[in-house]
Amino acid sequence: MEEKVVNTSLEDQEFVLNMGPQHPSTHGVLRLLVTLKGETIQKVEPHIGYVHRGIEKMSESLAYPQIIHLTDRMDYLSAHINNEAVCLAVENALDVEVPERVKYIRTILAELTRIQSHQLWWATFGMDLGGLTCFFYGMRDREKILDIFEETCGGRMIVSYNTPGGLMYDIHPDFQKKVKAFITYFRKTLPEYDRLLTGNVIFRARSKQVGVMSGEDAISYGITGPSARASGLSCDVRKHQPYSAYDKVEFNEIIYHNGDTLDRYLARMDEMRESMNIIEQLIDNIPEGSHFTKMKPVIRLPEGEYYQKVETARGELGVYIISDGGKTPYRIKWRSPNFSNLWILDKISQGMKIADLIAIGGSLDLVIPDIDR
Amino acid sequence: MNNQQLENLVKRLSPEAEVAEGKQFLEVTVKPDALKTLALALKENGESSLDFLFCMTGVDYGEELGVVYHLRSTSYQHELVLKTRMANRDNPVIDTVGDIWKTALYHEDEIFDLLGIRFSGHPGLRRLFLEDDAGFPLRKDYVDEVNIVTK
Image 1: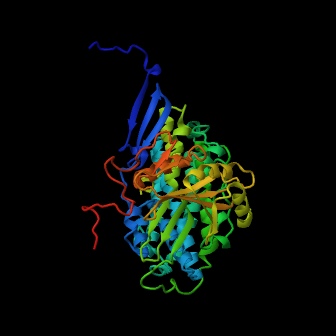
Image 2: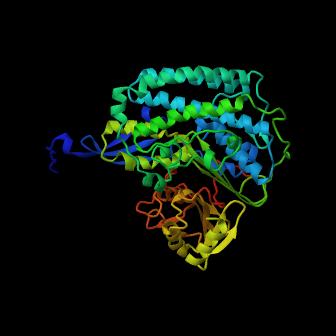
């Protein structure tokens, strides 16, 4: 057979580049098949399933309090909020009213979770774009929140602190003091983030008008969370269908309109400030009382269907439970924000350069175990 | 629109649809062959404008397989659930709604992977998570002697 010699310059050749599953910028085991022409992206095809654990199947043979421990392992950076989704679904199904104290503590912890998740995102996003210092700044501050979690919940990342009817145990006596100290501290250090990255000329050149997502695309692809709000889509569950104590606090839904990487970045930066505002409104007003409502030892949901949505750090997490009246769900479905957010990657990176893919992927803030479940 | 108005609209668009008021959502059940027409009408109609598919679930009901679509309107914030059921367990097929809501394409891949429901008109239906010979684990009659211990 005669060998065919390709004699064109690299810029004109079309070829496929395999990225991942072990690529540092995918933050987990995500494999992307990137079709390139020269350096320009033609198509991105995600291949997933490397951390598929069958959480939906497993949950069909587990009781509701047990399922909570699996939810931590989906979006491990929003562990507390994932727990809350199951708890709220079970409580609403059984018409259980949890004490005000529980609602306040859940909301504070959910917002702390959001801050630490965005801190880690900021740290790694900066690192992906070549700013190694960001990683140390982000991790330094995140440790302080994890210490608060450890003291109250026992765990640092995988907290499993919520339980149907309330909380596992009451908060640590130092909880309020430490949270207030953290807010004071972080109000001082957050401007450092801006000085380090937001105003950086190289960073802005690499993010402005890169990976533009239109509002229509965001709707059609089912995008939620800060990624959608950067494209002007109002979709904050905390605003539209408040749960826990979100109806008692005042905060702004962060909306940007350009839909590029820079706006997705700015949306998350502003969310950290809003989260601090929410915590400040609640931390001094935690009502006294019990930290749980007594539930039956075996929880059975009445026959029927239940849907609960919450706002995690990445968007709308939904849990859809079909119960046949037994102590385990007949079918449980997780509508995970990352699963929907992933597939826009192809659309918004077409025509961009391969190096931009790192920035775009980072700005979507994907957590792979949440995609695979 | 409130649920009553939505119900009237659905009845007008598809007289054969069964409409029931659930605990949270208005639940509309249609035959598989009527689903796509109704789905498109509900999105295109200016009054309902259900343009956001926020959850799509495949369910094994035992005798039948089903697909559940959770829809929302981003302009009016009302929500509605579309449901359909198929009796044919050996070769369940339903029309894709991927051309109405892009996100459906990938949820359909997932449902095909885990429940074996095929979607006609899908441009590249593929298994997302599992190997080709893995079977369909979310079906109730799925057997795995190694990993699932039944007491």
